[in-house]
Length: 224
Length: 235
View 1 (cartoon, each protein chain N blue to C red):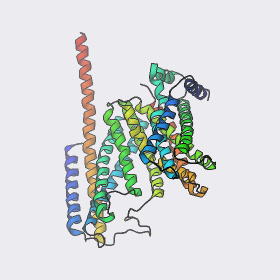
View 2: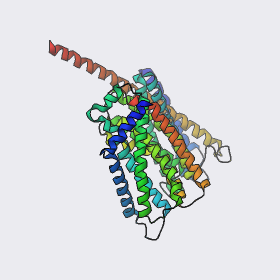
View 3: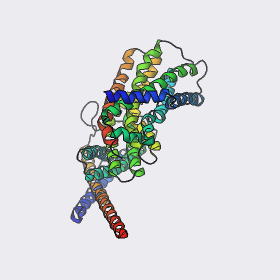
View 4: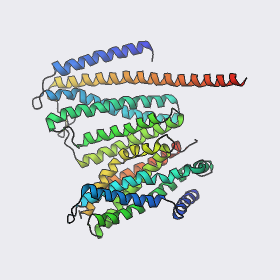
């Protein structure tokens, strides 16, 4: 537990003292939303909740692929990863710390993206956004779990940066389907019953991959 | 793989495959509603069966590799993934050929099509990893982890995509229960085709597995030679 807190505190402090990961994540989310507006061209008066939610999930995937893996990959510099592995720190604790840091960064980026989505797609700031928040948070957690495990793999393979999205995005598909449907419905003001079945899939996905990452992390983070 | 086993397995596969082709094109009656196109079913379903079986094998081999650490499990998983990818591609291609005249479109985002496509993408990523990375125990561990995670993803994919949409015909287990093949000759043809493709899969798997084992031995010999040369150079 102490090891978990130490690594997490270090990552958050690193970010506060001028780390670029979070800035890059937010900037990337902004860019993806701008691109989606140009590509889809939603007319001024039309408030298409499903399209806006879809754009948000595209932003989440881009931010996740490029940003959340940085948390682990940053350790490659100066042999930090080796030092972490050599330290008496439990590898499970390392996984939980990295996952938590990646999740926090993604959640902040997504919060910014939600605000931008409301502005760009002419939606309203109201209670429906609050109902969408847990859906996005579950999606961010799922992707953070995936990318923490996969970054440990692709970080040590030639052309691994290219490989990460090739592995992560297909694995993320069930969460993407459920998340896009649930957030579109929540944003459109659908009753909770319409969202519940998608939330169940998201929760199942998160439970599965957070635990799979925890169990398998020690096999991929091992000796160089 | 020794020569006798290879010959027997190859011969068995040849006989079964010839029977499956004869039954598919000559023996089995033409389906009343769909016409001649429906015959692709007898190749489509066995391909799907082999593809899914192969991918299951990848995950099982991955678990055993992480557990026992023996390179044979890694080679088995690699061989199964390669062959599974070929058959998964065949499933998508034969499905498209069937779907165009029946559904009027090469592709629909039906649940089984989508699931198969995602499976194809998942194992595409697995094979990319193996192609890009060198042949080390570390990469074998990575591949095992990807194989396990991909297999764990499949049930969630199936559930989510089924909720999303579905129009694929349920032939083997219809929604009313029972199966949708009226004529016993259709059942017989399907069973022979399944046996033929299973034999083909096992044969290909053994061949590829033997090749990979041989490659591992060659690598060990080459490393030994390099060491010997280096030692000779030192003298």
